Image (tube, rainbow, N blue to C red; front, top):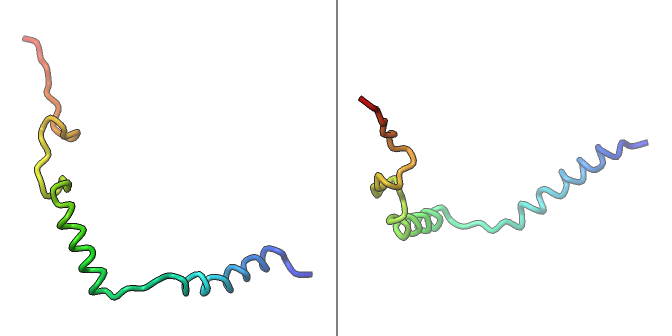
Length: 68
C-alpha cells in the first residue's frame, strides 16, 4: 500500500513545473528600466537619500537631563 504523504509530495513535484510555466517573464533590460523609473519617482521619500529631520528621527541620541 502506498504512503499517502509520498503521493501528496509527488503531486506537488508534478504540479510545480505547471505553476512555474504560468509566471510571466520580462527581459532584464526592461526590469532594470522599471526599477530605475520606480527609484527616480520615489527618491523624495527615501530616507537614505534625503536627510531625516532630527525631530522625527527615532535613532537620534537621547538627551540626558541632569540636575546640578
